[in-house]
Length: 425
Image (cartoon, rainbow, N blue to C red; front, side, top):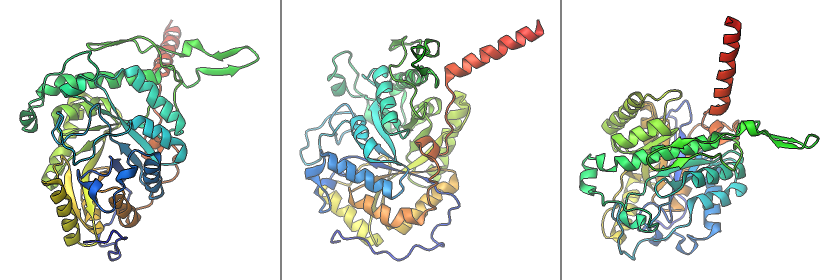
């Protein structure tokens, strides 16, 4: 058994990975790690999971390692070993802190890393989602993102009591029948649309601050969302002025056609779960087909591959570490993503394989926190090209331009049309 000390793999040479650009590196943070038995690992800190120190130390460490952004998991119900239903297990971590509030706490104690909390679209008012994320963008000086997530379980709906949700046939869903969840994804698409309209509802120069004339804002540059749909009607503007990024980045986790279409219509980044090279090629093709089918315009989705990692100095040690975790769990870890147990060199080869196929990067799920994050920082990230430190915001760091405000663009288009009409006349 490994003693928990730092790994000592051999030097990583240029023959292992030859990248001309740095892939996007995201780290997904969830409790004690993504393996259900991670809290029982000797390296774990189960007594600290609900402390601010735990989250501060993890994310500050990731920032020093030049991770581009972290995502923070959340849900409207307790964690469960069963998809979209509750369980009564007591041998796994249950309970978590609110992801958006964690990110808000982390904003002033970090300076460069992106903060992307999960905020659920079902049962949650778009207005509250929009203003909370805008506030995070202000608090972090432009490093906020958002991972929208559905709530598809009846027991989570019961927490709110406003509507009922029919049980999902999980076996049919896993076999490819995603029509039963279409309504939830249609609602999510509308939520993202309303949130984006609210983010744009204040034009960039709506705040005047002219003490001499007594004008603080220009009311003509504040616009209502004016959205009417199946699930809600939203007429007003946000109470928060347009934030540093204008539109915080939106990232969607997708596995099938309908989620791919949500990403294509509503997101900037998509996390996907290929398990081998053939799937890697086919999933990327499906994402691009979804973009074409939904009529996506502008920048293509950035596609990141998901991978759950157990890192050790040798393949045998990594397999043994995973086996110990599985034994404590009572069964092998079940994951939608590839479960990778290997060395830092092997993980680098896997990342290089994805980027060579056209992926923009990876979102890494550490099986054990903080251990696998530490090994990632010590041995994997230093072997990649250094991050471009020029950008201060998350958009800039990932190469996204500042989005034009839709209402400013509409006003400019109207003014141009008026001038053209005058010239013709």
